[in-house]
Image (cartoon, rainbow, N blue to C red; front, side):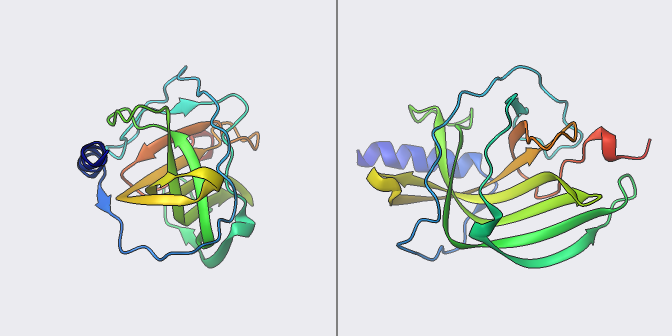
Length: 190
């Protein structure tokens, strides 16, 4: 088991861009990890920058996001973009342990289809008062019975969720190596 964990840890560190700073601990879990649904790998959305780590995974019913009540707002500012003016960035920090289940990274074979992430920070991007992108920084964790964290794997990753068409469902998900938002075509100046 120790060799397995070592291999997983090394693979995650090599596949991630940043190492998580020392994480605080809390015995309270803000919410349970939702049952993973199978993503529909279907249509890939082409990357617009080198920030793409993985192609978009699409889910027709949208991806489940953690409730904002699990976070404290720390800042709101206008996001400076000439191509997409009027975007507002709101930053949040977790009030306690917020766990999120996401599809496994294709670069890491750990024998499961999902990974569990401890979300520490979240950024919401909105235009016209409507959110279109959530960017979350998470630390990969092992979760045992009762959604108790049994191990922290020290890998940090950025999870990005996007509402591509403005219907309020965040149907697109990917891992990224940038905290910059993905701005859908519908919000950019052409």
